[in-house]
Image (cartoon, rainbow, N blue to C red; front, side):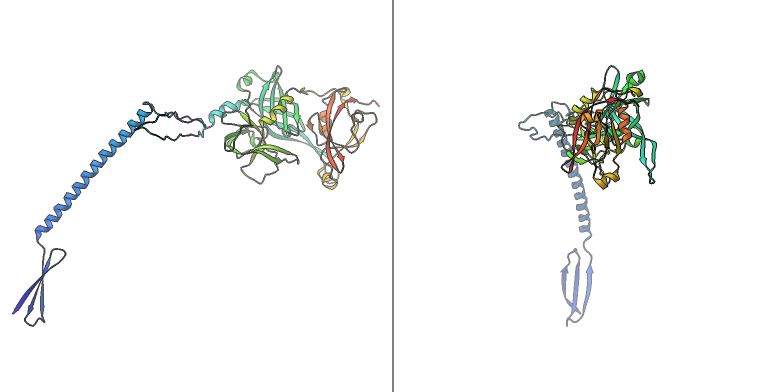
Length: 446
């Protein structure tokens, strides 16, 4: 009935039987299952592979662990059995041995570790920082032309730099103490003492003020310290710095950053220019006169917030200490004026004065200061060479902007004392600085 059986093996181990009739027109298919023994053999082969893989992994782990151990022992052998020392100093490098030879490490890179914790430096330097309050009298003219005066106060910072037999000496900015009626200094222990101006330099915006030692308690003397001066000539971009000051008058605060630029020439609020260290450490109002420190706690700059660039961020400025030091040394030798002279002994210049307001400067181009409207005949001013039209800008190195400021300064000087007076004089269409020595006269009697 059916004949010609045909067998065809498949890929999975099964086979099909084809049976045909004599004509070949009909076919019946039978699918035969693969041998069950073959399936068992396949399962056994997979289990063996799993065991083999686990064994290989175990062997690899043993060899890897042994390799790490050998490397570790080799490094200890090279280092003499001691771990490399890593310093927390910003410039220090680890004490790695300099050995070469077969089987030893040939190229070992040095490591620099930067310590972001500056608390030790702050603890060391903070006792040398003070807060300063300037109590002053502001004068002006109302819209209707009436003169007025009102009391005010501003805050700043200072650095204790020296001590003599009678005084504790503090460096700050000139603009911090300018125009003062009284100065109050707050030390690290919270005690407050009155300070007096010893000397100022308006061009460098520097001032030295003095606190009589008799006004400082023993407890405060034990709490404060004298700052260490550094060197700003060898600074490099990127060096870490710390700024300390009486920011916003809230008390001493600390910021840090790096040196962003050196020898930066900047225009101050009053139109003058200066050379500064630029840093991204925050220097805010009240920080003026405070310290810019290196990582060793040495003063490398005196912070100044008198820069006409309030619209920018991350750009603070400080007076380089190497430029300031000679001026500070000179100011430290000045005579401290603690008391006003008795009325009958006050020095006399012999001039009629007028304030140069911002409106006058804009309209007439006259520089700010005290305008000399008239010079009395045979007066101290005339004998010194002061002329009508001169603008007095400094008296004994201290900047003056108004008649009130000049009169206040003169009140500390006796007749017969010689004082340097700086005036701006119109010459060839421009105002130039002229420095004159004025020997103060006596008040005229009526």
